[in-house]
Length: 132
View 1 (spheres, rainbow, N blue to C red):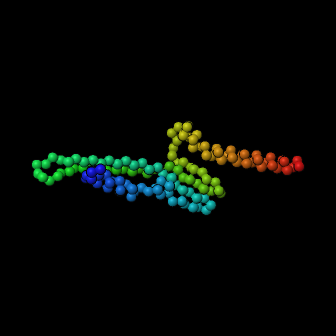
View 2 (tube, rainbow, N blue to C red):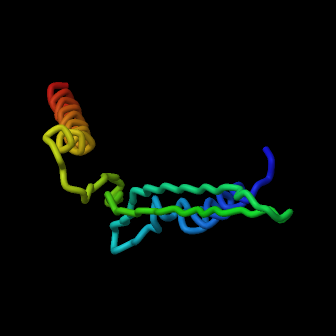
View 3 (cartoon, rainbow, N blue to C red):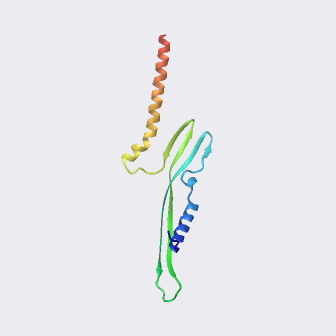
């Protein structure tokens, strides 16, 4: 691709945005309090644009006009909570529908069902030991 001032504008814009956002922006640094570890999770949205034009000139000099820009939004959405060998996600956004709320409850429901199954298996083993 031909190197033009527009390319330079776009490269500079993208480079500045890369400097502002990295992986630790999305998955934050863990915070430990007692036996609980909290890891913040954020949503990053970005957009950029650029453009330019060669202007006609009566002189031999090349005239160029252009510009570029971008925007970034960082919004916290959840915390990953690690406590007593259990991992769960606590969302901090407001639910917009019942479906959103139901989807958010799935991990907790799976944990509760697995605990019930473990408890049932443990009680069956205890009953088998008593009958022998």
